[in-house]
Image (cartoon, rainbow, N blue to C red; front, top):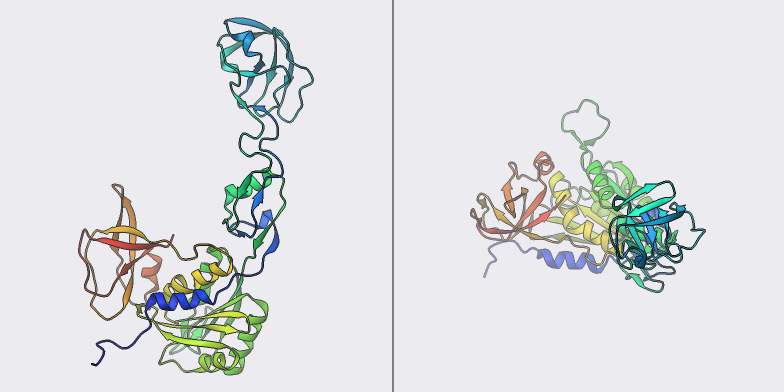
Length: 404
């Protein structure tokens, strides 16, 4: 029986193929100041406690709770303890130390009365509220104790994680390294000098778009330039990129009808697979390696290039950086209007606008779904995943990839 649609590679098979060949890089020691977004290659075990000493959570007076069991009561002020300064005197019966937030609790005191519950005359404080033992005191190790497992291996480091590492006195941590990813655009029709276009020319938008996507996702983007359709120049750019970078992303030259300059060079210097994937847009994809350096050959149409990056290059690169869940998590939205399509044997990734309304993620189509229509991609913040078929009607549940 003749197949209704041309034979194409299923989307999940293609992505599985890519991810299986995107192995994580060897760990390296990284300054904490450069570790945002990186993944830990080791467990983080606390070498000290947070906080390292008992301290006050409030401005007020450090007291013996037994002295303030009956109020009002007057106590003699023996010293003032500011944050960053050690107490000089122990608090005895009938005494109190003025204390500022974060300052160490003096010996003898077991509670803090907040300043709003007191009044002061000369060196005497009148306490107007009874407090129990431990009131407004943060014990040593209240957040982290010496020897605790603070973060597991394969933790993606956020701002909060880095703050904890600094609180533990850590200046470096072993992580999987941040990738350097080279970006190349190819094609005689492309120009990027901002001048007047000659007949048949178009401006190169893909290189800037891909560099921006890579930077947003925490990679170091390396601009390897715009290369015209000349095999020697393409080969030089690819080999230089493979030598300087951890991975390469190209755009253009991977479709069935393209001139085969890129294909010829990559087949000569690399180990490549040329795929037609059952998705729309971004059906063509080239993936392989030059030596040990992965190469992602993305389509030249601007939207196809961005979608292909999202579906294949981004998860592959994140896997190389040790991210435990490199694929973006899909959420469920609700169609606010019909999301129509025709059966064609492909999964469609439709540009949509997603908004939170009445506790739901509501999805609306964005005008202009052609793979060359980059403006509609700029106006979108999500991709709706439309399985093969006739699409969705208003009110249907829709799988959605939120892009920002």
